[in-house]
Every structure is written in structure tokens, then in C-alpha cells.
Length: 112
Length: 117
Image (cartoon, rainbow over all chains, first blue to last red; front, side, top):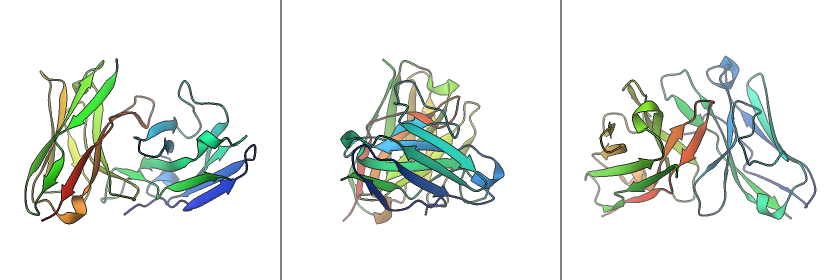
């Protein structure tokens, strides 16, 4: 079971801005561990979108941005495009006994 | 080309065993942290196991004692030995590389494991 909580779904019209929250606890995000974000298009493997809370790998458009504060993190998509319709997952490290790497529950982004 | 290619998935009865392989190219498996991540049908991502470059291994509670991660340096390949399989182990299994800057920066296409009688 996931220890990072995300909203099940968010939606927006093309060109709009949407944000996805990722809420953790004192054993993961709140302990200072980095948050990473992944985009999973239908039927494909996840792709690293944001690493180290706010950094974009080469090739990721600057429409995607990440931030972290306290026990939470957020992913923002500005200028929403049809090809952004996908599932998004946050991920961090957890110092509890239940596991090392933890993923968020996932958020489906729908472009209206 | 830098890539990961999984194989070994299939249909297996409850209680059975299966070994997944993940062949790497373009980089050295033993120099990286390598993980298995799974995704049950219609569900989210679940981290399964990791092997560090130094050889240490760790597992999610859900598979501890049943799954074993290993690597063959000569074949540049990562493995996941899965024993005592249960219906809830049904998922697409991805191998992934933990990038030096954080996050899993390289993923395979995945291999489907179905546990059913």
C-alpha cells in the first residue's frame, strides 16, 4: 500500500494550469528525502519527469515543474496540452521498516 | 543504446516459481542501483526490491522471504526469483535504474506475470 497520497484525478482545459499534490509523512518527504515525479502514458512504462524535487531531465518541457515543502510536494503543469493526458506518480524514500522506495497513489490527468 | 529489456513473465499457478530477467545495454548493471517495480492491472506503481552497487539487497514487506533479487555481472543482467507466488503478485514487472541524481531514470517495457489456477 502506498504511503504517499495523491488526488485520484485532476482535469483542465487546454492551456490551463493544473497541480497535483503528494502528501507524505515525517518518515519520507518530511524527513528531507527528495521527491521525484513520473509520467505514465497509457500502455507504456513510467518516465522520469522531475527528479530531486524540482529538476527536469533533458527533454522534459519546462511546462512541468515541481516543488516541495514540509511533508508534501507538488507537480504543476502549465499550458496543458492534449498529450499531457496520463497518469502521474510521485516517489520518495522512506526510512520506516515497511520499505525503502515509496510511490504515490497516482493521479489521472484528463485534458477536457 | 541505453536500455533495459525484461523477460520471463507468464502464467503460473499459485504457489509456483518464476524467474524474471532484465538485460541491460549501454551501461553497467553492477555500477548502479537497480530495482524491480510492479504494477497490478489497473493499479498504481509498487516498489518491489533493490540491489545496490555494493551488493546489498532490500525488499518490500509484501515480497520479503519469497522474492530474491540478484545480478550476473558477466551477462550485465538483473534477475528477480519469485517463489510461493500468490494471486496478488499478478502484475507487470518493470526493472528500473536508480539515477545518480535521484529517481528511476531508466525503465524497461515490463513483463506480465499472471498468477492463476
